[in-house]
Length: 122
Image (tube, rainbow, N blue to C red):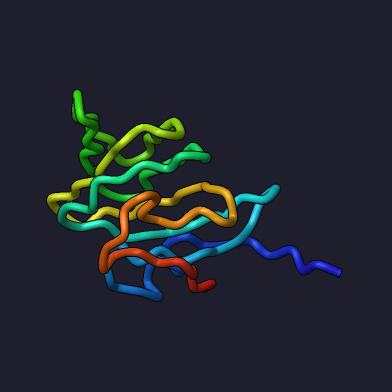
């Protein structure tokens, strides 16, 4: 039997301090529910087969696309359609929650020191 427990996002964010190292807090219908802290630029990448949802819990960041930049602030979310190249850039630390399929790799088609093939569960 599955245990049903509420999740306190602030408590989960307090468990880690590194940037661009996602942590899974649950699953939902074949999707990972992930928390991450962003600061500085990420890598340009796209996901060929999956959309990606970013929900800002605290702070704000710019989501860069090749043709525009969108500022996403606290309490806002943005969905990046599959195949669209993008790069998150955070001037100050920002806390985000992401929803993506279980087999999604955080850097999509790009491989870098920020690539996490396995996501730690907290």
